[in-house]
Amino acid sequence: MTEERTVPVPSAWMTLSGRYGRAVARAGDTGMALVVLVATWYYDGEYDLLLGWLMALCLLARRRYPGTVMAVVLALSAVQLALHDVPEQPLASAPAAYDAAVLFAMLSVVHHSRTTWMPYLAGAVVLLVTTAGTVGMPPLGIESFVDLESLPIFWGLTLTVWLTAFTLNTRRLYAESQAARAWHAERDQEQRVRLAAARERADIARELHDVVAHSLAVMILQADGAESVLRKSPDMAESALKTIAATGRDAIDDMHRIVRVLREGNPDSGDPGSADGGPPRRLVTLDEIEVVAERARAAGLTVDVSVEVGEGRLSPAEEMTAFRIVQECLTNVLRHAGAGAGVDIRLREERDTLLISVVDDGAGTFAGRGVGGDLGGNGLVGMRERAELAGGTFEAGPRLGNGWHVRASIPTRTK
Image 1 (tube, rainbow, N blue to C red):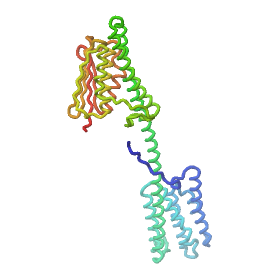
Image 2: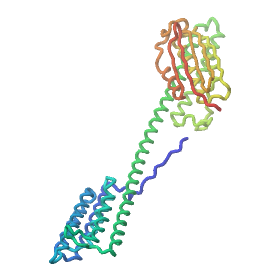
Image 3: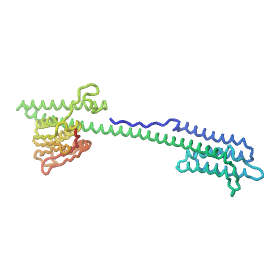
Image 4: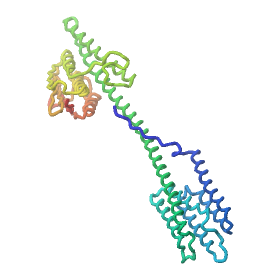
């Protein structure tokens, strides 16, 4: 079992979206604009109200155009300073409470700008402007408007707003990344489920093919043989019928297991018993090779088996793979070469690799010409898939002259 990694889901307030999120955003923009408008009423300069209104209107577009809004607000602040330094009578107040629009604009740049350098530039500009306010700008005719005692206050307020906005922006980006990860994780999980289902369908198709094809091939040949000797040799006919019955019982057991997989979706859980408390599953080992070989002999084949594998050297999955490959090879010989063919089966372990070799003589027919149809199909595909899923290799083809050869190699697990 592999441990599933969970992705933390961001808090709802960090990922507001849709109509509710837009309503909250508009309410925040309107609130900042109202703060600036209310602040203008405390000043009686001729242009204070106009400047405050213009700054407030700019803040309504701060989310969509944060950089432009800050540039316009700074330009209005420069006009405010110029009007404040009119010699006869100041036409605007400076500094004024509605200059909070500059901090709001800086906050918007830090929180909503999509470029990495804009937040730092916005903070640097505001600090530079407040620093310049202590000495003024004589070339422009603007005198100092911030005394040295007030400079730390302006700097502290600017840094507090900037750090707050930066922290909120970092949290927002983190929430968005986590939401994206959660979405991708869900999509990946769905994809894994689909792939697992596809693999399971392929496994079931291979199992059905192995069980049905081999069992039916043996049973058909045995039935034909029993029919031909029924009157001449009742003992041989009886033996053939017993083989048919044993093969059918094993096939039914395997079919029941496959049907349980389809119903329960829990194949090979590792429990020797079934999920519903039924009989234990019949384990397939290399010893079963001699069983299918004996049935093939009873069907008329000459089968020579050699298994040189140490006990306990293979895992159950590796033994199942090897058995199914040998079983499919015998099935193909029964189908395409028929009775009278000779088959040589060799299994040996060499350098932590199980080598499988199955060679037949084709019952004296030329390679590629057999009885019962084509030589390709699902059988060879299934054997190749089994070998490759086990991390091994597979090759099959006609021999020079008569017959067919199959060779496979499967890495073994050292116990």
